[in-house]
Image (cartoon, rainbow, N blue to C red; front, side):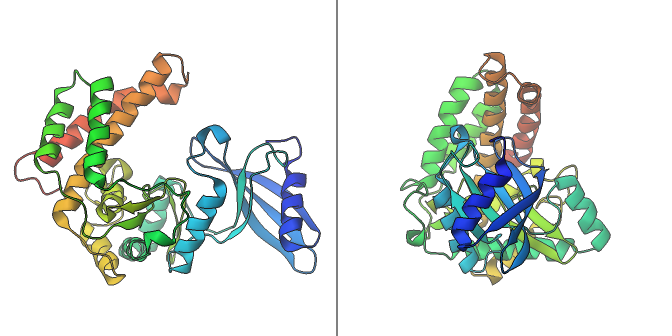
Amino acid sequence: MSADPAAGLAEVLAETFGRPVEVAGLELLSGGARRRNVAFTADIEGEGPRRLVATIVPPAVELMPVAAEAAVRELARANGVPVPEVVATCTDTARIGEPFVISAHVDGETVPRKVLRLIEAAGNAETVTRRWGEAMGRLHTVDPDDAPEAVPASGADPAADQLAQAERGVRALLADRPVFAMALRWLERRLPGPPERKALLHTDTRNGNIIVGTDGLRAVLDWEGSQRFGDPMRDVAWPALRMWRFREDAREFGGFADRDAFVRGYEAAGGRFDLDRFRWWKVMGTLAWGVGLAGQAAAHLDGTVRDIVMAASGRRVSEIEWDLLMQIRPGANV
């Protein structure tokens, strides 16, 4: 970020609104490993102060152009998905040093363990989970053709493509781990065909990428991994993985509530839940996460990214092996 990010943000907002803007009170928010979120107050001439958030995306980790991410967010918002309103985008790195998106600030909690404490105190776990399902159901009724072409498209057969990618990852990083080989065989034997209806996907909706308040779900965040023409059950299965429950293992979706609450909301909003495809994508998501953890550890060991967090990822591979065994064991319903 440049030495004077407030000035760069003010310039972009002044161009957006067509009148002078003053920016103050910059505050770095908690965020992901790749992107930074900075909250601030913009005093817009003739309108007054507005609380906004700039999401700053280093080019090296940009999964899609910020303009495309902003467009898919606005498409989802127009179709009833709770998403912070996009105020401006900027690809000119001369402004603050990196591309960014400016959004309306949405009050609420995003840190997973704090989210769980909040919903426990508010007693609104069922409401949050049902509205989360509704949000995904609305997203999956959006015509993927309406999304910008810059949003990556899943292949003609999303499950087969994902399985091939997982096989390559296991061969490269986990060839000596029999549980991963067993899980691959399970996935191969049960490989579903292309979905009847393909959808616009978020791909990373989970506890940690949503904003929650005492009144329930307020917003879905982090759309940089969106895809067109994907299998909607991939999106539904991902938030149900055990690693997003944060020790509340009995509550399948985010540590909030059971599957029924999510599915009720999902189907009420137009989604079509398919139990067999859901289970397949849940096993696939777990395996893919294990490959990702192994890749992070390898990046630390080979010096690509020397970071203690990356190094610690390697020890979690054994947790993933346990999860896989619990999911593929005979008679499992997880």
